[in-house]
Image (cartoon, rainbow, N blue to C red; front, side):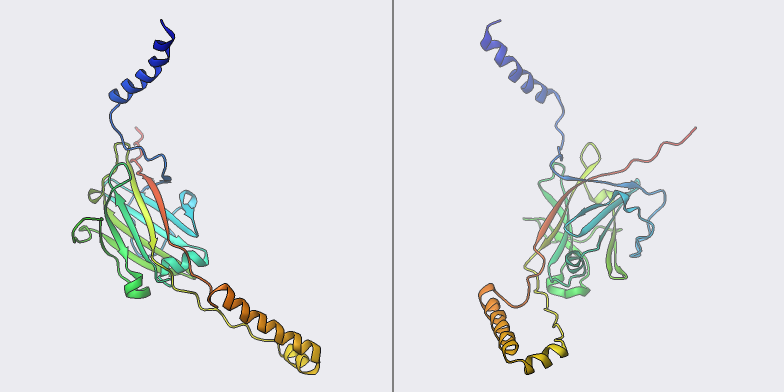
Length: 251
């Protein structure tokens, strides 16, 4: 067989294989989140003691978990860092949306929005329409609960599986998006030491140095931007939630 034909054969084989294999939604580029099978319905009460965080997906201070049975999907979001807490509680005044996408992971179908920018920390979940879509309502059977366990915020939700579209392999594309410019954190005033003030009044050189230091601080704020530090940056976590299957019964 001529060399040119040998080189062309692998390419032709790849094209033929692509034509034979059924089209599937490849979500390999998304971070994988393994859902656990729920032996009984999960109470949506803001208490995550019944969840197993060994399968949690963690990124940017946020922790996400999933459980499902044959008819429902439960999602849990929590945070253990300051940045994550500000985003999940609404303290940063950034909107938080959980988007459910069509198979393939590129087209949003609908979402659940916490409109923190408009409603503040008491925001209630609402329907988020996909770009180009119209108004709608959260699916019947949807429920949600936000709570706090100590300083750790928890957001738990349930939705019917009939409202989302997994791919042929039982994987569901989900985006966890925090959008908008964050509110600036208020700088905490640091108490000045009484002994430093006393010493500064007695020692001329030290007092002048202290004043110069304060002057440099003022200059630094002028040159380096606002005196209050920035809040958390917007983010988008792209996940592939692998839905669990019912365990086989032992005979």
